[in-house]
Image (cartoon, rainbow, N blue to C red; front, side):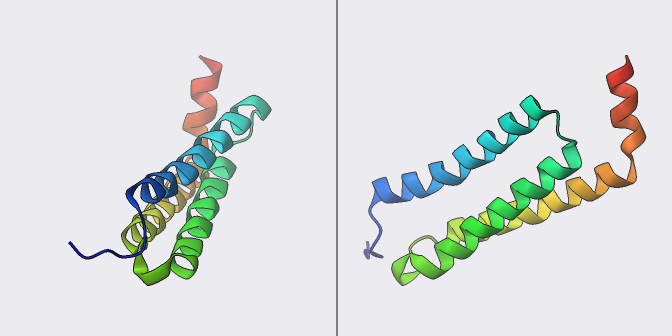
Amino acid sequence: MAHNGVDIIDYVLYTVYPTAAFFAIGYAAKITKMRQVYTFVIQALVCFAFAGYYLAAIPMGGAQGLAVILAMFGVLLLFMARKKKIEPAEEEEQKRT
């Protein structure tokens, strides 16, 4: 198999970094009681930032697949934020019960 300049342990770490950031944002948002819309938007921006960094900084396209997945996940998070912004009544109704 051809070597693309990225070792397997590096690739695993490239997967762990955005995951840790994603969960840290979720945890911080829960502690500060941030609205879920803003949590989704911040998480999407972090996904886009990691995707852009991986495309630009990893040599020979070593993390190109991971960057594409992160970008798609960022788009999904933006759709989720849009849905929460359009239908905020459900979120507040669940808090009351």
